[in-house]
Length: 461
Image (cartoon, rainbow, N blue to C red; front, side, top):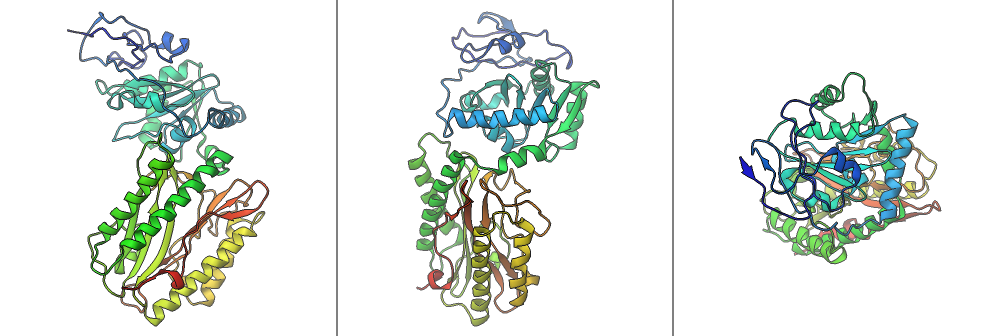
């Protein structure tokens, strides 16, 4: 047996239920800072001298003060109110958010999974994030407008028990879950945990559609981040020279963006900003990783800058050449720029148009240039809480099969790409990428300022 050292201001860290999911009789340790009565009754307080068995999940952390959040309380309240409207529309008693993007969007806490499950449990009265003990008090500090319960690794049922008790606080019989991102084994586990008298209802699509329309605060952050991407682009272009490895160019680019983010948002968590810089054959895939390949004279280059601020994704992507491109490469590049410019105009005049109709317009131009068969992917997508490992607002993408109508509040890219296979004249990947914001007045603004095309992006020694 071990004893807990006396400590003040201990925040609730949830212990395990070693006798099974239905048990709730084991003691838990409670921190008095910021925990409402509902959690006090759910996770009882025990004094600092209470003995406990170290095989159980009783820990103590001082979570400190709440962090300063980038988004206002009013903005976060708007989001949770919107989620509760979805709950009413679907007759839900509770929602268990499990994806990185939705937990972040509705609680402002971006978790680091590392193989562990996380959650944000929302009822009509409460919002509580559920996090792993390895994170200490950081999830508590970063959760906006709600509480935090911590589970430990001592028992594999700890997470499920925590979520179950939070849902039962609302006597939940209909619970919303994200079927677009919830693995099947975890879906089955939730069914087991909540019991046969509880129904699980998909809210993945409804929450995605809600996130697709950006608020004024979101648009302000995205504009700031787009300016950071432009700074990254300048750093990238300055680092390019024959013989310089891809990774060195990427390092210079990322460093410049992180420093600017830290200057603009001193209270932000500095995480996930990255650069993909590719040269030669490595440009054929938009998401190809950085390598140690040195830049050669005549190489096609692909610059991709991704400043991440508070979980929000922004991108700047440009084709460049190390020296004068060959004639066919120049023709392909100019054709892709032609589609890019036409796409920007299509979005600027596109309020009320469908995403699919814009894609078809641009297909016609590529077909005229004899390049449609080399197109790599859709022409653009939404922005917001997403990254290369979480999120995607798939309902707002410029693809032929998407019938979403462009409307105020949408933020969308124009990013045509063609890939000419290795061994053909002009081989490589050609891509430009700008971000456009559709304002509430219907006016569309291109917030990407870094230049594109052969006139600006041929790097001469």
